[in-house]
Structures are given as C-alpha cells and as structure tokens.
Length: 369
Image (cartoon, rainbow, N blue to C red):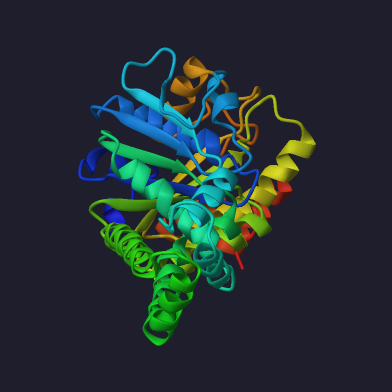
C-alpha cells in the first residue's frame, strides 16, 4: 500500500508510473466508468507515446463519449494524434474462441466431442473469449491500454478467468490421458486422423495456457497493471466498491485509485434539495475516505451537462489532476464533518458544541458517528 502522504486526491500516480501497461477501470453500472476511462486515456495521451482505450462492456459507450463511431479495430480519436479506441463484442469473441480455439479444422465428431467437454465446464467459453482478447491486445503496439470494463459482476468473473482456464486445462488433460487412445481409435474408425487432431488440440491448448500464464503474471505485477475503481457517494456503489477492492486484493491485483463521480458541492446556485443530497453524499464520502485512507481518492464534480466529445473530456479530465474547488459555497464553510472534526481537534474545541452551533446558524453538517 502507498504511504498516506503519497495519497493525493488525483490520478497523477497513473501518469507518473510510466511502467504501467494495463489500466482496468471498473465499478457498478451507471457510475461514470466510461467517462472516467476516457478522461484517464486523454491524460495519458499527453505523457505517453501511444494510448489505446478498449471497451469490454457489451453496452459500449466509447462512441457516445467521444461522439465518434468505433469498431472492433483500433481507431484514432478525432482531435488526437496518439489516442485510439476500440469496442470488442464479447459475444462474437466467445463464439470464435469456443469453436476455432480447438484447432481441429472442419466440424467433425472429434471436434463435437471436445466442444461438449468444454461446454460442461462453467465459464470456459467466456474465459476463452477473454484469452482471445488478450492475445489480440498483446500484439498491438501501444504504450498503455485502458480497459473500460463491464459492471462489477462481469469484472469479477474476468479476474477469475485464469483460474477457470487452469482448471479446464487440467480436466482436459486428465481426459486426454485417460481416454486418448480410445478417442484415437474411434477417430480412425471414422476415417479421421485421431493422432493429428490430438496434437492440434494439445498445441492449441498449450498456446492458450501460455498466454493465460503471461496474462496472469502481468495481472499480478503492480509495475504493469493497476485497477481504478469508480463509484458514486451512495450506499450500493460504496458497498460494491468495497467488494471489488476485496476481490482485487484476493487476486493480488494492484488497486490504489478510487474515483468518486457525481459529487455535489455546496455552491451558491444549489437549491435546498441539492444541499440535502449533498449532505447524504458527504456521509458516504467520509466512509470512502475512512475505508481507503491509503488510496488516491479523487472526487469529481457533477456537471451541468453530459461530458461528451473530445474537448469536453479534455476539460473534465483536468479535475482528475487539479481537484475541483468551488469559488464559493452556500454555507460559506466546507460542509464535510471531517473538516469540523479536524478544526475541533486542532483548536481544542468541543466537537458536539461546534456541530450544535452550526445547526443554530442553519449550517447543518452531518455528524460523525
């Protein structure tokens, strides 16, 4: 974990760590993952030679974010010279992986048999799809790749893929050792080259196993891979973020950044309802800061308009580096209970009396438990 003094409220650490090759961005649906991924990509394009943003979320939003159509091939983003985007269709990759990865050529009884064996292993098709994505990505010439991942549940499955594949390979090898001779004889009776099919299968499995081994190793290398969690200051989002962080830690994947989107600030034009919602957010922001005191927690403001297009993303991305601070606030003071606690302790004041005094002036601040 990073030292507390190193945990600035920005993503500057992602820009400074030039060894990073893969940056995964994930979280609950609807918290602004795509906007965050694109903003990080924009910032990286200013300090790295060549940057790629890959969407693995079936509900692709990269095209909407940049107001530009993207496909399964890397496409240069308009207005940039070194930032590219691509949207991968997991369904088509799964179909391709489940059939072609066997390397047995045209449809045959032997191929059908292995496909059925593979189908009996939960998650194998999705895992093979992920392998195809990684094999494709590894061949590309980019300094760093940002992954805009699917919502939390899909992301957690992604983290389990190396284990899923390892288990599948062990089962296949066990079956091959046990029934290999019988399968070859059956293939010969059908006029097919059983030994050739077996060799083709083993060759393909070994190649896939090698790729997964490399991916697994890179996943667990904090110099090359990190994960950015995105959330909003509400209960379900904070809950899912904590679950995600625990899973990432379990799989030894580096995670030191939390980006909190849709944060309300007590600015002069805010209405009473917004201030009430802001106080609710403050409670969860405090929880986030308490839970992740050794993380770089970046608080992003909710904007009046959608963040769409290159220029809008360039402007919004600056808040990831220069934390947003309103010129004025409605209350005239920062309304975070953490601030009240800090001031009370610094000036040796009774914290409860400070909260009460603020209440009397109409400056209600959520109290710490």
